[in-house]
Amino acid sequence: MKIYNTLSKSKEEFIPLKEGEVKMYVCGPTVYNFIHIGNARPMIVFDTVRRYLEYKGYHVQYVSNFTDIDDKIIKRANEEGVDASRISERYIKECQKDMEGLNVEQATVNPLATQEIDGMLQMIRILIEKGHAYRAGDGTVYFRTKSFKEYGKLSHKNLEELQAGHREIKVAGEGAKEDDLDFVLWKPKKEGEPYWESEWCEGRPGWHIECSVMAKRYLGDEIDIHAGGEDLIFPHHENEIAQSEAANGKPFAKYWMHNAFLNIDNRKMSKSANNFFTVREISERYPLQVLRFFMLSAHYRSPLNFSSELIESSKNGLERILTAVDHLTYLLKEKEVSKCTEKERQTLLQAEEYKKKFETAMEDDFNTADAIAAIFELVKFVNTNSSAENSAEYLQALKDMLVLYCGILGIIAERKEELLDEEIEALIQERQLARKEKNFARADEIRKELIEKGIILEDTREGVKWKRS
Ligand code: AMP
Ligand code: ZN
Image (cartoon, rainbow, N blue to C red; front, top):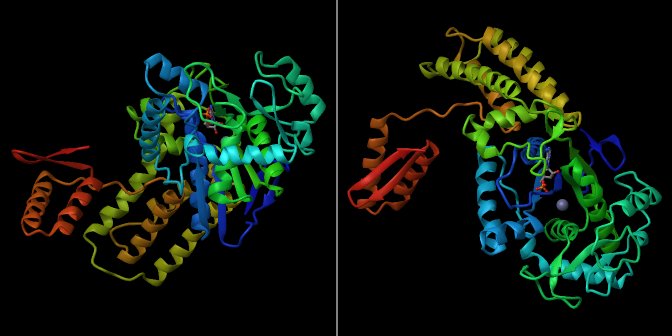
């Protein structure tokens, strides 16, 4: 399996640090508002990478943070006259709802920056001890960039170029730095801002240090894959490398993966350019798996332009796949158990070709565009090679294939069967009876089953009420 590594600017064979295991860290969003669909691109893309690695049998530890302390969060909190934590808690919940809709698997851990301050203080102390960081007069602690000889190795910039660029964008008001390239590890609080005690000043961490610390705490000094959007290559990831490698004395991440932007009218979608759609807005018009399917219709390193035509066409494409699965479900419904004939066995072998195509695409730096093309070919094959004449075993095998490949992309190909009102009423009656008999396990089971089918129960004084979610 090949992965394009930003560090070497080439596709490399994937060899994990430890056989059978993958440690993966993905930079998560800053939570001051609803996430936009540009933010959803890395979530979907790297969740798909994880799913494919799991399909290959790797045990994946997947860590993705929430940046819950930052200027934008504080600004929003001040506008609303509430604590910064109120803002971040609210938007973490909203983000998690969106991620659930997008069928992003639960991370192994979702650390929060504000819960990891001790680790940050600790790493900053080590950097100071080793001569890689220093305290300026106003209490700001800076990383001494030139002390890390390999600085620039990820973004492929040399120090002189960087220095020239930096002089122009020097931020006014920063405490006296030794060098323009030095970046903040810890900064003094401003009036009305949340802060933490430290030996340097009452203040808060810089953005970059949080990821170095969270990756170390939950995955260790060396990890396999570090990922995020391409705007993070510089300075965020470059700085993470400098901090982690200087502090830990070990190479930080083996493979650096970066997704290209989601654009609108060929411009990056972003909050600051005010050209964005939130995931929530899209969810009002489309099931979110249409958005997921749309994101995966391009290779993750290619820019992707968002338009209503393209999302419509994703909707139609996905519908074609779901209809093929519906068709197989329909054929299977009334079928007695029956084994494959010899001819059917041969046909299934032919269908294996699409599995090969799918896997070859995914092995080539997760080319989901080609993987989806293989699924469409399989759909066509299924449509021309399945009928009421076929055996149940054969039809089931075709259906399993479609469901499996879609599942690796995080697409649920099998539509949920709608429960009829009478069926719901019957289950509710059974649950009431189970409760009366103190069989709470069964009662809970029924509740869960109903939730999975989109039915929400409400225990009221007048009895149990239900509605469809
Ligand atoms: P932020 O909340 O801005 O730190 O962004 C969270 C993640 O979304 C980062 O990995 C960004 O690189 C990524 N991101 C932000 N905007 C876009 C976009 N328009 N297209 C793709 N990725 C984006
Ligand atoms: Zn990060």
